[in-house]
Length: 208
Image (cartoon, rainbow, N blue to C red; front, side, top):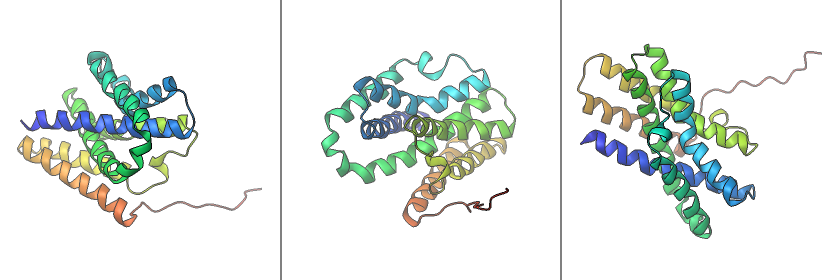
């Protein structure tokens, strides 16, 4: 039941990620094809990069082509209701936080299934949770959110450590899953609320 619920949450988060990407494409005045492509890349890019690095085939959207319908459909829906999207800003911030945590757990679970070392499991979770947004920002010529905003990659890493670590300790899978979801989601929402971030490295001196 928990895994089924996680899959439903994943699809909702996937659609939300695609819609935020569609809005980013709209701010760059992209045509409909560009909007749909950016939405698909954002929603599915992290998982695709993870699968390529882990030699895990088929890629998620190749094995489940309906994921392309979810992301593409969400992009088209965004175009249709764009004038009302500003009313849903808080909802999308929440769903983005959910997506980060759920994608991270799913990515780490795939690495666990492939018998990867613990550090690789952590990296796989972070890649799945964060790389889609990085690709979106790069294609939109922005500094990736990962490098400039509140706690993001850190939330992904902590979520994965709890999930994968609990599994290695032999704890109940459902309890560990729910605990990791809860901790990750709370951390991300609190970071958004209070502006928590990692220490920044600032260097302004010229070496010449």
